[in-house]
Image (cartoon, rainbow, N blue to C red; front, side, top):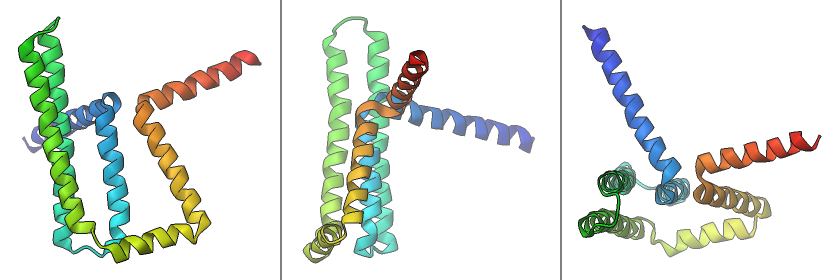
Length: 171
């Protein structure tokens, strides 16, 4: 009996991860949210946050990304049900997008409350300005993040395969 429940649980986790991956692969805004969350998390170590502040940060990440997932659900269902323009579909999509906007806006507010410490921000700027290696690493990571946001994992894979095929055809 426990084995069946365990298998069902693992299957449900697989389906849930598949949904998150679908959203990342198909929604540029979800990729923006993931990159922003990674940057915020990485830079959070400069601010010596408490456990409670980290909990607030993770809940904020979850709310924004969860809202984006529900926005994708609303868009997919709307597109499936309406083969052409329908005013109700527009309203549904606008409401779902508005929910993401509200969550993201309040996430910025949480970020300002947690990270608006000019002395720490200035020390971060100095760290990168006076350490060219760190600055180069930041530029490279930012470029990689932009490629990820613009192309997505599938677009990156397809681009790499296309370039690989071009090279093998030239030989």
